[in-house]
Image 1 (tube, rainbow, N blue to C red):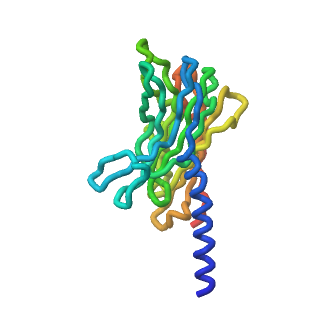
Image 2: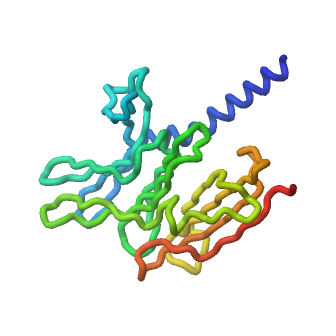
Image 3: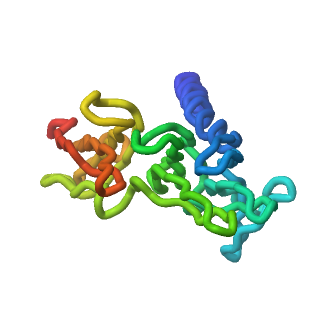
Length: 231
């Protein structure tokens, strides 16, 4: 009984530590100049409240007990002298990572990298590298363009032979190679076979993406699949 209680305490501590980066990412607002005008934009993981009938409402100031706290990445700029806010992500449960950094190496302005997740294990969600477009002739922000996104047809790896389905995934944006300008993306995907628990996948795929200036997006340049558990 004492051992079970100790294990429960350790697990609770690990879960609390794991949740801290996501909480910090969700709470912060980043101010940066993301387009060609001199005024900075604001990037934030905005809190929204999901209702039982499927609607999203603004918290007052937090979600009530019968609502579900959710997050969405939003950018705030100025349009005709007034604040203008638009979403650059889908609505998910929590923000795991949110950065503004020079990613593509092609423009002087930085890009936005985010990883936003759903589910108790965080296996659902999406990740993107986004560039904010220049303002239009009326001075209103025209939105954002995706330089890389996951999952998508060009980034989602095939299930390896011997596996039965996807398990989890994790992208990292970093300068992995001196051969390319800007930062590369390393994507790690794991897969289970029919006998695996989701904690213990049998296969892993590691894929690297680099920014291609001619195509104006990230492209795959290296991939490797390996078995990480023997039968």
